[in-house]
Image 1 (cartoon, rainbow, N blue to C red):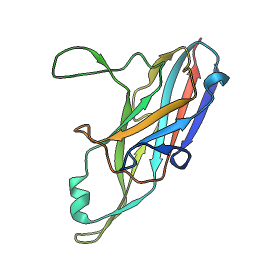
Image 2 (cartoon, rainbow, N blue to C red):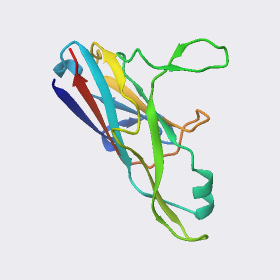
Image 3 (cartoon, one colour):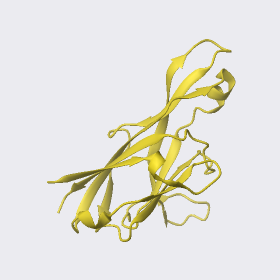
Image 4 (cartoon, rainbow, N blue to C red):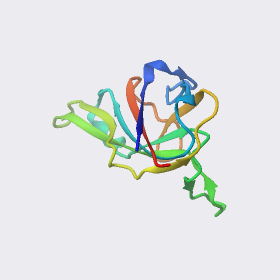
Length: 159
């Protein structure tokens, strides 16, 4: 089985919101053959300096959303009780590279290894050449994230 790895560097995207939490990227999806894929991802942001007080406030994982037209197996709970589809790919965990006693700053980044989130199964291949990556807080609002990050999407061709 062939695996395709797609490296996404945030500097190659177009910022769609004031916080930089929504980026649009371009990619030629025609290199992928039709079929079914198991999709996993890894993520690493740059370290960001936070005050100790802000570090305590920002301890929840960040939600990573990606709008690819061939993801059809993700759903989200909503207040109406319907089974609405979702573009949530997974969660990014805050990681502290240096943490000194308060009031010293904390150096923090967001990470996700390939085994941190369950795989997503996708059918077919995306059409067009644009897609969006969004980073949101647990409440669904845009997360003011570090400007620089790397996202690697791995697509293992199943059939």
